[in-house]
Amino acid sequence: TASTAPYQVSWSAPSTGSYALSAVATDLAGNSTTDDDTTVSYDETPPSLTVSAPTNGSVFGSTSVGVNGSASDANDVQSVEVRYVGGSWYTASGTTSWSYTLSVPAGDRTIAVRATDVFGNYSETTRSVTILSAPGSINATSINDAVSDRIDVSWSSVPGSGITYHLYGRKSGDSYAELV
Image (tube, rainbow, N blue to C red; front, side):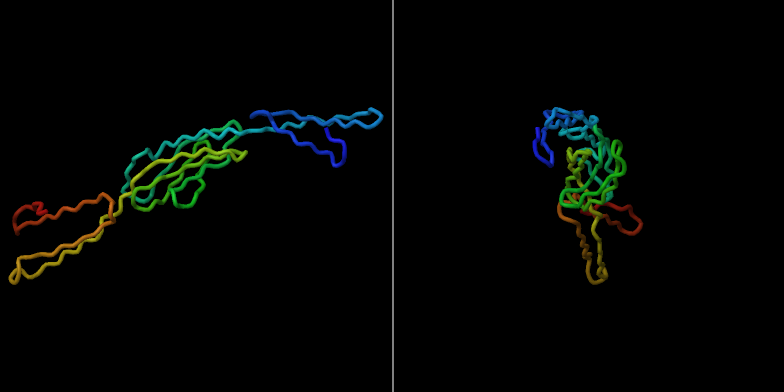
């Protein structure tokens, strides 16, 4: 009940749902008027979110990772966003069925996905993935075998990238064999 202008009142919805609200104005003589019902919705339930790809523990040989899945909400999903932890959020294409191709740096990474409904409620889930770096450069330097029987070979890669190297060699006319 409000008794002075402007006539305002605050009301807290008891639970998630739709409510029909109506205002009644009564003057000192007891005359009253009622406005038409106004329907309002209140929701504090986050959307349901499913990530179909990537699966937890996936390993990729490319920094381009397809992320997709589905989301649902009784009051509509407003957006689905994707990022790798430490990066920026990007809006996926679609909401109930969504997808995004994310560029992820090499290394062990966590991909996060967030679905938000029209009331600002959100669900977030993550997937741990490994992005392999491209093999580093290989530079073999041969020293004239008349002077030395040694060949120096050097290579590099990103630490922790899971990349291994094998060195193969052969004498002219023979098959290649692993040296180290």
